[in-house]
Image (cartoon, rainbow, N blue to C red; front, side, top):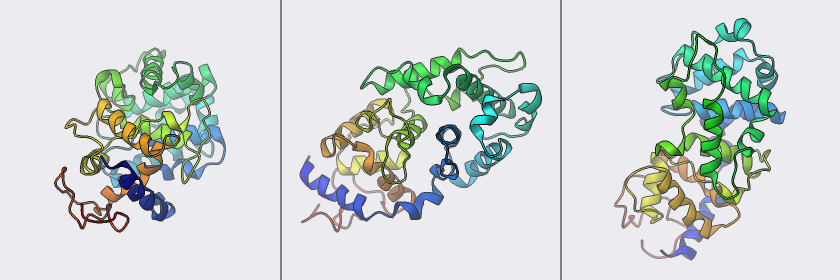
Length: 282
């Protein structure tokens, strides 16, 4: 791996990428509607949890959930009553999550906020420095231990909204959420201080996996936690303090179709990521 050349390439992409132009087509747009840290972290977790599938399908669901919470999602959850407000969400559903699953999800967030005071403290309570896997796994364990009303439970649809690396997945949506909360540059918020940007793991989706193979950051086939860590370790060589600075631009290269499928070993000389920043042939 020619890391100096790759750094030149990705730094060029990062410097020239129009972050603000793409924010409206990304789920991070939802927490950007709020100003208070409590509202930002709640809206962010809701948006990230449902951000799978096509953006035009999950965006209306997130819109409806946040609309029902009023101007302050944080205050709504701190005062949430299953009897009063539970019915607000019972008619919603999205793919693997039924209306009851979404009600259970809202109830769980309410319980976590009442127990810890913030979602950041719920993460930090189980965080082992430099081991994000432990933080996510511990957070999910806290979720699974929440007291549930008799009519609700921890169903498969609820578990899908709280993925754990212990189940073998890459936990893309949690990693995405953590990037939003921890990084303090570009369009990310930087309102969490318990975790450093250098400790984040890249949100691994099909776009990041494909582009990372093309760039030589991974040779793994399966999109799992090990692949996410391997890609992040490569990016950390390029920027030890902020390895995820490249994530948003790389992902949206794939979403926009700019990065086309190519031979993972030898990207074409016309590769839109590897030009015009790189010198010579690929």
